[in-house]
Length: 160
Length: 160
DNA sequence: GCAAGATGATTCAAATTCAGACCATTTAGA
DNA sequence: TCTAAATGGTCTGAATTTGAATCATCTTGC
Image (tube, rainbow over all chains, first blue to last red; front, side):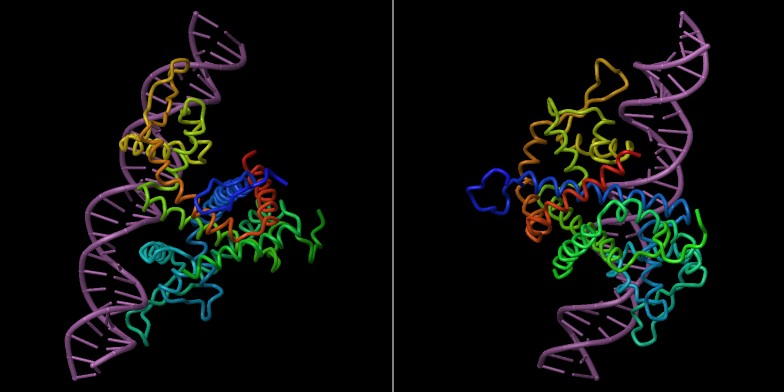
């Protein structure tokens, strides 16, 4: 047990050593892992991580397409940022936009065959990086617990 | 290496459900927590997260100052990005640059009193967000394990 | 049926980030 | 000592991101 705490952990209190360590590790790991991911995707397919995420979400969507705003929510980017990214992906021929019949405000973003192919090209390397940087460094128990804990963290924040 | 492999987790193989879950949670939690952090710092002190990190590192450095490149390494930011950020912070009066006597290539970035004050202003809110979004959502055991596991992940990547 | 407000998406200018070129030291080696 | 390579920082132009404003289309309540 660490030093005995005599008062309640009120919001705003300094973090305790263990908490601070977890926070700093969380930050650093996030930074570093993302940096590796970004590097690999750029090198193997000229994609940014966000663009990759867009393609991934589209691939697993029904009919390989999603409305812009749903896509933005999935990938967790702002609408204006998504507009830009999809424009880039469209320019590359990986995504195609089309109007939505039932709601003429919305726009479908649909994965093209070229987009699917691009995804296939980078995916093996992507998986390798995910393994090498994160998964293979953790024990099965840690993977389990990390999944539980961070899912809870994410779920909390989504419901805001 | 045999080419006969059918189920071994060779690099490049699809992630298993548990692994995928951990990976997605890691990504999502990182995104969402950082978003909250960014929001609070911007609102309470007009600082970006990276700028805040710069001030934090400087505060705990001897004489409240660091050389630009050491600072960049600490904050895990590219040199050119740090140059920009420090220029902004200097403009705001939170940091002061000065030449280094022993190595005339280097530049000291030093935290000013105004910078320290700015830090004091945003810190309580910052801690609150760290608690609310991450720490308070985890059990002590999870905090412990998260710290261990992600420190290992980060350490691995630093040594590249 | 219709005005007020919500929603979906894009646009614009300003701010930030990136990668690489560049300049001035410093360091190492022959 | 001289020179080539390494290091520390900045600068530049292009790319990206941000946040607010805008536009068009739904939705709601009356």
